[in-house]
Image (cartoon, rainbow, N blue to C red; front, side, top):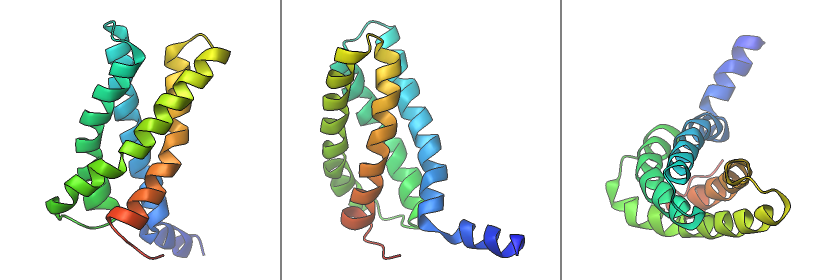
Length: 130
């Protein structure tokens, strides 16, 4: 029973997305924190972390989660990430009104944006059912 469950989870697109998403989130947040640490305003920190993170995420999400190596999807992938980018900025601005710590606020916003990224990638970039 446990072996069946593990095999099923390994084949689950969402499960893989969560695992790869953790890696991508840590990578993107580390970039964000680094840019804030060196003195960039949070808007620029989010912008640069998003640009670099999207390039990294495209490879990990496309190849590992959706089993798709089509680099022609990069433009669509980048366009889709404009939505989580906007959500991220809005959440950071809102949470900074409540919590005066850009690092904590950035972490919260990044985690919340992961759900929109999964939905958009699954339905608009890689178009996978299941």
